[in-house]
Image: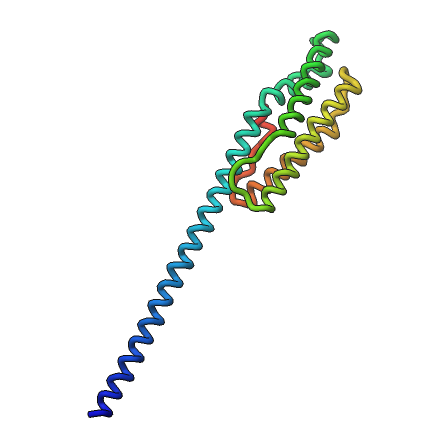
Length: 180
């Protein structure tokens, strides 16, 4: 009888130990699933934050960018008087100065990883350089500015922003179209 009770006790101990181990695995799986949800939420927040940043940037700069593009469209046009071109150049200079100022004070809001935040700052610096180069070119020769450095910096901005969006699984925005 003692042997039967001992065998029953050992069997029970093994069964309880096995159940406890299974329960621990279930808890671990639940915790891992919870972490997966946190990662998923974080990715969604990053995507949402990127889209919000793009929208804010577009809203802040669209009218200024359009003023600059209107001026650039008048360069070399046959039906534009020198007076009209110089007036448009002054408006474009003011718009470029304001764009630089807005980019200096532009704040990214939302949730970003450190890498994405640094990449966004670099992209915004390229955009700022684009406007600074436009301003310099217009001041140097309003009738025939050399905008190659400005266009190069803008292209760099578009590429940088596009790669950030693609990195998180979003389509790269066409910022030239968004700002025009």
